[in-house]
Length: 322
Image (cartoon, rainbow, N blue to C red; front, side, top):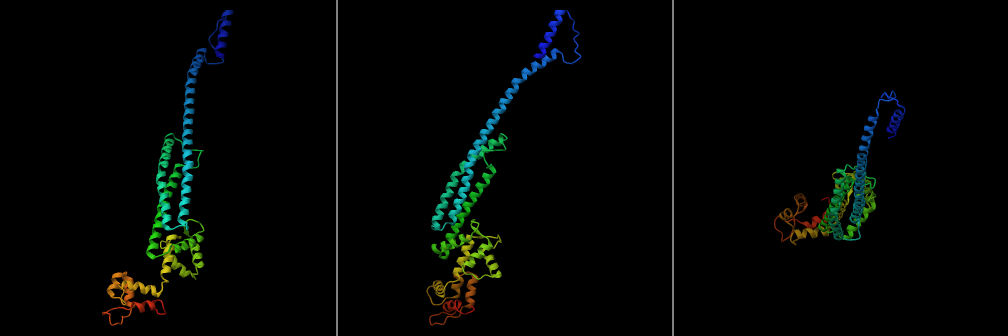
């Protein structure tokens, strides 16, 4: 406008004094009309630019709302998953209650986790909206959707694995006749040497645990035991493997009377047992072991081929090399 004003002033002066203008300005190639046209173009573009800026502000505000909306949920869900992981871990190592009580508690956790799935789905929906809006950063949370997904899958795996472990412990307890008190003792020993508190013992921790129980371990013997508790060479000893080992050790300390009582049941309360009964009631390898080492039963009531399980049991836990 100032430029056009100057031009108009020049025209007035020229008319007043009768000066004829040549129409050529040696200092510029722009004519007054060029300036006027450009100014009209600027006046047209300014509103368009204002509209674009307003639209961009609205877009950024909408994106910020999406960021805050996602963050508000993620900042609740992320810690919730971590808390449940820790609580499940505590339940699995708790020795205050019975295995059935642990199982009931874990089942409740499992149901709570299933019911919480709707929150994960809602967060997925907000994440999808953010992706469609090309939002790839969020200063309001440290939790990305990928972090939440991984944590959620770990939580599902942890609850399923822990329930399975407790189910196996119940089966082991019932199958081997272990008391709850014995299981608690096993758990207390395991927890004491589980230095990382992750439900597993490193070989060094396991060795220290065995030594505390009175085992005299050389390298060869410990290597043999490790093949029993860690057959897949994972480098850790789980509580289930620890229980299996301890119950096997306990079973091997049965008395001769206990073994006799077991054979008496297999023999239908007779003082002798037959080859057929052994092969019918025992695994093949154990049956053949007993048959090859039991002596013939001597008694007026014995049929041909009757075997003496009483002397076998006594010798097995005595000085004999059976």
